[in-house]
Amino acid sequence: MGNNRRQRVSDCLNSPFQVRYENAARLQTLLNEEGLLAVISFGQEHETKDARLVTVELPELGGNSTLEVWHTPCSPETGYVGEIRYSRTDTVLFGYIQFEVSRVPGMEQATYDAYRAILACQQHLGYPYLLRTWNYLSDIHREEDGLERYRAFCLGRHRILETTPDFERHLVAATAMGTRTSQVLIYFLAAHEPGFRLENPRQVSAFRYPSHYAPRSPSFSRATLKPWGAEAHLYISGTASIVGHETRHVDNPLAQLDETLNNLQSLADNARRLHGLAIQSLDELSLLKVYLRQGVEMAPIVQCLQRRLGGRVPALFLQGDVCRNDLLLEIEAFHAGILGIPEKALGG
Ligand code: 3EB
Image 1 (tube, protein in one colour):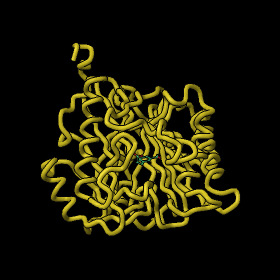
Image 2 (tube, rainbow, N blue to C red):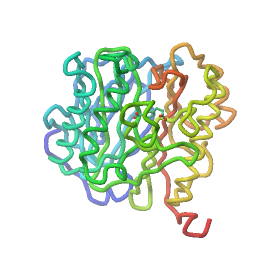
Image 3 (cartoon, rainbow, N blue to C red):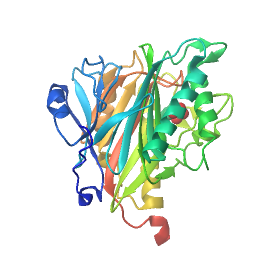
Image 4 (spheres, helix red, strand yellow):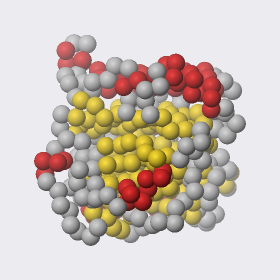
């Protein structure tokens, strides 16, 4: 790909990329396309090494083999900065880091170091603001030196992010999910300008969770809203059946799904009220990614989703270990929409 970034400025005035689910049989074709910012595959890792390709090693459910494809009208440039592989346009930076965590120095320090490498890459290339992160952690519930690995991850992430200017205001949407492989994978999206941090009035902000969940609270926001000209992207974090800061409906997957959808609706309402994002109901979302804990049956979840969303939103189902033991499922979402006038500015 080299340095031939043949792009017209006008191409990137609105959303710099679009996201779609496509059939995994298209992988080679996609990798030969110029306008590919990133492609995320699921399940087994591929032989092909490409800075635009990451593999989330979680089994896809439902018998399909799906890719998440980030198309751009530009020609991304790819490369390395330190341990980060990246793909970028003039507007956005996609990057990832993958590593083994050994007992020494352990998950906290490994997370600290990984995020330090990400921040350095962002600084070096000039995309200082994160918009969203995905964190896939091996053995997320295992205890090491008396601390669950997810909690050690939270410690390391907090310790590095709190060194950045105005860090709570700039917290971004995230996913943190357990995998059954040995490596940790973190991938991210960053830009020249920050997005807006969005919280959910039904939920205590994760960065304000009481300390019994983790010695340092999880450093993420419920969503990031990023205006791109007259358009906007809404990156919604992994969202679960949590009201206030407590898990609801322990052992009841369908009730957890219902509560999760209530949370997603409340977030969408907040994006409309505060920023004028043109979204009324969840069936307008662009994409969903549904994570089910092992043993949770998929068919009833699909039925219930169809009842509430009418089956109009493309959804990908993965099996993963949600980071709180009592959560049976989690849903993340992406929405590309239009910005209008915020209701709050109209007195709404
Ligand atoms: C929750 O709402 C569920 O630590 O980055 C969801 C998404 C969750 C991201 C993270 C954790 C994270 O607290 C867990």
